[in-house]
Length: 466
Ligand code: GLU
Image 1 (cartoon, rainbow, N blue to C red):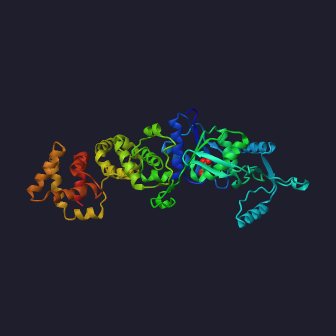
Image 2: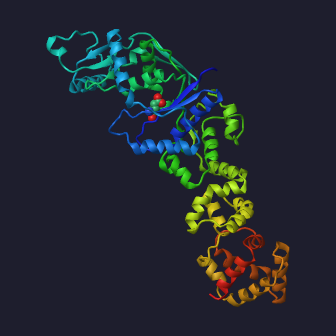
Image 3: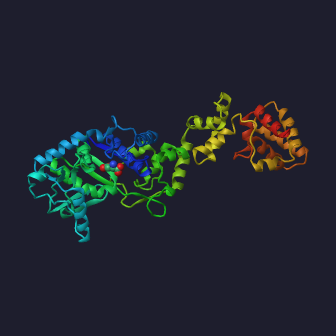
């Protein structure tokens, strides 16, 4: 398909939420799949609700997800003059007309129509010539909708969807203060930006019928539509905050990798057979509109966690360390030394084995930093209670080792336990408590080896004399 151009068109009234991120991802994948363009348009015509902070949050969410857009982001408000020009053109062509009804009159007529269960078409001035005094009053510009026939959208997800034109109102294009409406702005911008495919939430399907009429009134090609079902919670209800309706930044803070998030959002509404693990390069290869599901997707944190585990394990230890380095330094309060870095890289496979999210990796890695004195959990303190003398002798035994390797260390601890007629556990548990302070940890002998003789002895002695 040549020249595919898609867009993501968020209204900057809040953060980049999970549904928006999925819409952005699908538009991005579709464009990348076809070697086309993916554009970002900020729909900031609602001046009262749009904020600079929200624009920044949307952009940084997209950056984090790796969804780079082509060219500069476009401000919809910036094209207001062009939107007005199109409304004037339709007026001149007789495809739109001036409506002199005041807000009060319109509200009254709308209420009456509702009472009678009739469609409110807003067409009170459609066939009326204003007299001289009326003509000097402010007016809105309304589109002359067809009154007969039907409008069909061959939606790439929903299939053919048809409405009777008699249900379409003569929508306002320009308000009486001269500001363009959202419906006008969307259509003009999609045309001017050369958008070929509109992929968005199915809460916009109803708007699409009216937008099609506007494309046709201007004699413009109508883009293809793909309206994606919204995301629901695991219980099938509308997605709430409790379910995960958070900003993308919250997922970054919770410690998910962008690659895991992309894979998760892809599968949340799109499928390729039974494949669950779909890295982004593969997704670009496979993505199409046909495989978007017709039913609402259900958000599931467990699935997201399991994808995150998968992608964390895919990373080389040094890459994973760079990913968490800032957070690790924040936790320990120090920049990483070369020794600490070496230890963490060595320990990474076992750290990641026990981790679900990045904070687990940070915690696991922090044990390999010079964090003396190690702070103790209550349980660790209880384990250490009365073990000071034992730790002192164990430290002496370990001091004698000249070749600090796992088998040598293990043999030394075993012979130490045997000589005192102690079970291994009775020796290992206090040593673990002294080294980790009670933080979750993996194989103890490996921990000792990687930590090194000096740091191990120092931590043991801290507790032996405590
Ligand atoms: N600005 C609209 C929204 O944030 C999207 C409009 C569109 O995609 O056509 O819901």
